[in-house]
Length: 393
Ligand SMILES: Cc1ncc(COP(=O)(O)O)c(C=O)c1O
Image (cartoon, rainbow, N blue to C red):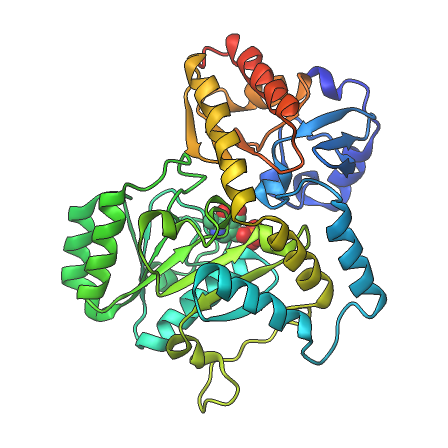
C-alpha cells in the first residue's frame, strides 16, 4: 500500500458503491485508489489529507496557467454573473473563433465541449465533405473515446465501425503509401496526432509528416491533425513546427481556460457542411457548446499564453528534459510536455507523489506557466530520486 493512502478517510468506499470501480474517469485512476483533490492554486494541488504537491499533470495538460489563475477566473466569474448559457449565440464565441483563426491561420471554427467531441465532428466533417467512409489513423494514438478512435477490438465497438477504420504504424511511410494507393477512393481522411501521448510522446518525424501531407494531397484525401494536446507546443499549433497545413484540426484542453472545451478548425469550403444556411447541412448542436464562461476563460488563457509565453515554457521544458536525460532517465517529449519511460509506471507515480509531484498516470509531465524555476528544479529532483529504485535508468 503506498504510504500516501494509509490514513485516508472512506471516500473511495463511498465511490465504489455508486461508480464502477469507484471511478468515473479511468485516466485518473491509480491503484489501489487515487488521492482525491480538494483544491488547486497556481502550481499546486492539495489532496484530501491536506498534502500539497506540484501539479505536473495539470488536468492532463489542459491547465496551461496552473490552477485558479486570477485573470482567467475574473473573466469567467464576470461572464457567469451575466448568465452562464443562452439559447442564443453570444459575442464570446466570435471573439474566441477570431483568436483561434489569428493564431493558427485556419479560417473557420466550430465549438464543442471536449476533445473527444472535436475529433468526432472533425471525422464527420471529413466524411461529409468527401462522401467517403474510411478513416486512416495510427497505432497507439489516443483521440478520445469515440467508436472510430478507440481500440477497434474493444468491447462495444460495432463491426461496421471496424470496417471503416484502418490503423497503421506511425512513421511507416511504406504502409501509408500502400494503403492510400489501394483505398484512397474510399478514404475520407488520415487522422494524426503529431506527438501521441499514449503511444509514448515521441514526435512524428519531419520526413513522415511532409510525406503524409504530400501523399494526402496526391490522393485527394483530407489531412486531419488532432492538436487537442499539442496546440500548446507552438503558438499556432504543432503542425507549424512541421511546416504543413492541415485540412482540418481539432483542439481542446488549453482553449477552455480550465473549463470543458473543444473545437475544430478548417477552411470555409469544408466547414460549410455545418452551416445551417447550406441545404442538406450536417447538424451540430450542443446545449452548452460555446457557453460564455468557457469562451471567456479560454480566450483570456490563450491571450496570456502568447508567442513569447509558448517559447519560454518550451525552453524550460527542454531544460528539464536535458537534466533528466543527463541523469540517465529515459524521457520523451517536446517543449513543455514530457513523459518518463518505465515499465514500473505505477510505482513511479506513487514515488513521485510521495516526493511531492503529481504526474499523469502514464508518467506524463506537463509544465504550466504558474511554475517557477524552483518548482521545476524540485520536479527534476523528485523524478531523479523516484527513478533510482525503479531500475528506470
Ligand atoms: C490527442 C487527443 N485527442 C483527443 C482527446 C480527447 O479529449 P477530451 O479528454 O477532452 O475528450 C485527448 C485527451 O487526452 C487527446 O490527448
